[in-house]
Length: 298
Length: 126
Image (tube, rainbow over all chains, first blue to last red; front, top):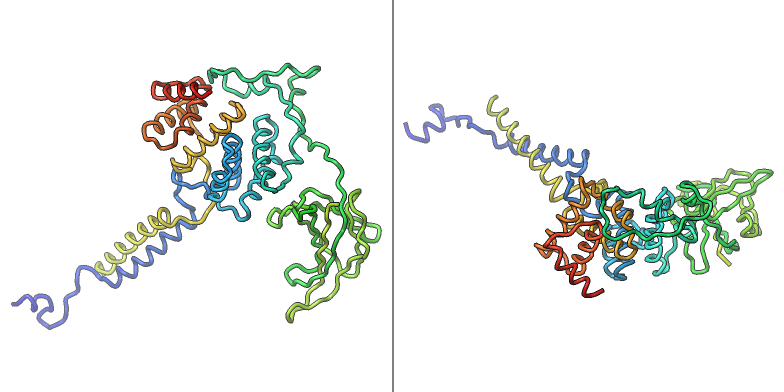
């Protein structure tokens, strides 16, 4: 019997092989898809291998503060910018730094002198490039935590060779009073003027008052109160709370058939005309008219 | 039938392993879910140097320790010493960065023969 006979069998049919390449190829592809899907569901196996842009939000904020701290010492703006860009922020890297400082400052980071200094470093970096954030308003006017209070945070056996800077104790202050309560410091009263009010029709955002509060350069100012009044009721909303819409933005949902007046309490006179919503058409779709109002600092 | 099952199992196994490898290493998901302690060594060094630079600016040792604690280390001083010596021996960072690390380590009460020359350099400058 020849080799060919052995392979095809006496009847001339090809004997089944040890392996089915078609089944293997199909299951290989299915396996690759399964493996990739698993990595997408359970996240990356990046422990010890992550890059800064892969940091979760809070850790990314701390990393940005570290960049600002380094900038405070080296003053190397291009290096700091490159590191911020490497974080791959969704917006301008300096705006991202301002947001990080704002978020950390709002979250208790300013309870320590260390945090205050770090936020000041961040603020120095982004404000040097014409950016602004809410951190400026959260920072106290001056550091006021005594060094002894700080020293209690350090492990007693840390063994510092250099003594920490010391300050005389504050008069009439107990241990608790040594730490200044970090309520936002009073800021000078700002005044604004409603410069424009334009209606628009957007089926995705119907019957909305979109207010923007900006300074004279057009930069958003967060934390400003905007008041809407109708009949005998009123509501106050604040700029900069919707982080994805920028520092300037705030919005209010209108109802049909009601006239609203809008102003900024103690900061801007009411807009001359009242605002109301009604039917409008975008493409062939019916929607409700919305308004964009801009308050500019005067 | 064994031929079918054999091919199927082998294909699925190889494919899943390949998919896991490619999904985790060359093409990781675009996820922002890592902690600072998960950073690659290069970026851990970078973070440490940034903190050391911050310390050089504000002399705020508790702050530096608190920030380094985000690296989830068993011992921050030991980590600093190891990092400084490794960076010195591999020349992984430039001279200024090494001096910053050595300065922070010194103020935390650490010094080793490998670090000593950089402290002398710093002393000559200041």
